[in-house]
Length: 350
Image (cartoon, rainbow, N blue to C red):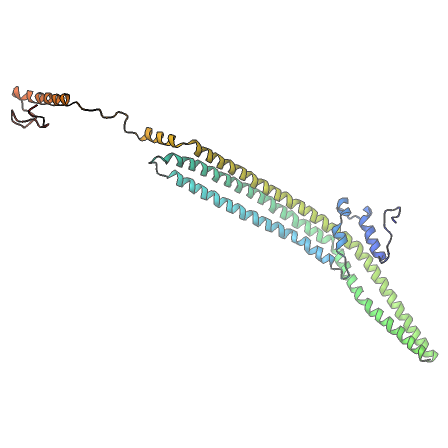
């Protein structure tokens, strides 16, 4: 049954120390400075890293140390992705140049311009993504530097917990020895009682047994004191570690969100370029290509007309008479045939 203070009393099999842990986790007064109440209410680290060997602190500390490693790996990933996008952009620019150098001859020539424009736009899309990724990389590196400073400060704040873990381990090692010594003295005293040993020997055995009991009691008290100190400091450190990890994960997720947004925007732009390319290809019909080639490379629209034999032969004779006129006036003739020779057009006798 829950008490008026909101704490659960120890149940059967639950030690007083375990009950104190539950109270510390739910009592806002036990919350370390800089740790949110939400982190205290959802104290996963404060509930799951205890155990007999008290290795929880070491596990949590090494977990927190992986934060900067993950940040560095994310920076390396984004840097590599930016390099890939830059390489792709250069490849598309090269492809655009190839389209520009396409043969200008033939009916297909106009479509090379469609390829060139599309390739140029794709190169710009990937180049823009490269720029965004480099900007994001700067943010990741800046966060990494801030993270290292925060970890250095946290390391100083949990030094007390490191000492508490070592003290508890040291005191814990003395307990079995004290217990074994106490058990041995008790068994010796019991043996002497069964053997009806002299009172003097019995008194000596009882004195040793009391001393062993006092030594064991002191060891237990030291252990409980060390355990209580460890419990308080361990919970404090666990909450600090969880707060750091929550902040780290939130920051990393925000960076991933920026990465996803940049890539998504680029893919949308690339999709628009491909859609534009497809539309441009559809708009350039076969009829348009044929007409454009005919208009730009055409040799004329006037067809050669038919010849009339009479008109054509008369014209040839007239031309021959015109050439003979200078000779009749005493001028040299351009023709070498003698007078009366047959016409060179092959129309003699017409």
